[in-house]
Amino acid sequence: MTKDNSAAKETVTLTNNSTGKTIELPLLAGSVGPKVMDIRSLYSAQDIFTYDPGYMSTGSCKSAITYIDGDAGVLLHRGYPIDQLAEHGDYLEVAYAILKGELPNPAQKAKFVNDVTRHSMVHEQINFFFRGFRRDSHPMAVLCGVVGAMAAFYHDSIDINDPHHRMIASYRLIAKMPTVVAWTYKYAMGQPFIYPKNNMGYAENFLHMMFATPCEEYKVSPVLSRAMDRILILHADHEQNASTSTVRLAGSSGANPFACIAAGIASLWGPAHGGANEAVLSMLHEIGSVDRIPEFIAKAKDKDDPFRLMGFGHRVYKNYDPRAKIMQKTCHDVLNELGVHDEPLLKLAIELERIALSDPYFVERKLFPNVDFYSGIIFRAMGIPTSMFTSLFALARTVGWIAQWNEMLTDPDQKIGRPRQLYVGAPKREYVPLHQRA
Ligand code: SDX
View (cartoon, rainbow, N blue to C red):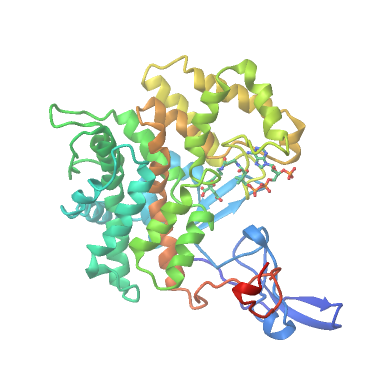
């Protein structure tokens, strides 16, 4: 069970030196991690706002789903360490825990797997949405459009105040994302859509829909489906990151779950967030060889150069991203399974990591490889095109987004998200008729 000490009586005293007024603000404690200063009464009491672009020091909600200790490089889902989940669990088991709070018992797991498996088909009309896109559309553009359009199909599960509707929509999204993501790839390739098969596991089914054709039997390698399943676990949820916060903010207005997840997909697409896995591959190709690494390290350090070392750094982790370590091991497993022993991009990535982690600029700023640094190399080795990398991230993150969306809607503290601002524009002034303007 989670521990919510938000009724604790510790306080923080703030004194506004410009008015001499002080205010006692409650200090709330969670089960682990930093306490939070509850500033909800600040504006009404002191007529001032807080200012925190990028939310560097701001907690937006209470949550019991995921906890990150950035200094220790620890990631817990419902209290379970990510390395144990990745080693011993499978994606649907982890998805159950993220969605419902506890790891499933055998009967619960069997039912969840059965329910998700039998929701993996999409309405046949959705098939026609793809045809509105050019074949060379970015898969994230197609995914954003098709997932948002799902709201037009599943009217029987978009009453956000009905817990049963919320759970049906949650299952539908978890179940259908592999199908829609695989179909964005098939559409781009000009190949026919492959339908999900109920006798396959979640990751196996996805890889089958990605790479099978109607012409012949396609057997998914058990090593590759296990690797894909593990990669999905590593991307499942991650506290209040940009895309999850987007889903929560969209959901706070009462928007339907499909529209909220489409908003999360849009936010994840950015290269500073989920788009980084695609950007890492482009960066490695641009660097090209080990002897050019110093040139790019210098660019990354140059304040006048917008170039950043993609796959490095993180708002929360000031230690190695625990997911990156597991990803690096999975990378070796996949390349060994595929008999790829001299993958030049992997060698380049390992050398880039070694050089960066010995450079004071990166050491001082605690910039370590994050989850996106190695994932692209694995996906590429599996035959997945770079343009599909972020869509796979979205596939995996759907359970995190939808769990956070459910948690937000059942939080008694929940209100529509409506931040304030520090206004720096023109004070009030009179309208000037056109003929009087210079
Ligand atoms: C994900 O939030 C999540 O949990 C996200 C995620 C998830 O699972 O949801 O973990 C997934 O998005 C991982 C991050 C993927 N993005 C990248 O790999 C892109 C490259 N990384 C950077 O853009 C950056 O590190 C961020 C966006 C990830 C974090 O940026 P912050 O926290 O706003 O940090 P910052 O920009 O304030 O940087 C602090 C300093 C700055 O230098 P100074 O001004 O102090 O001199 O570090 C520098 C930055 O210039 N810096 C980098 C750098 N990242 C930060 N310099 C070079 N290369 C980098 N990658």
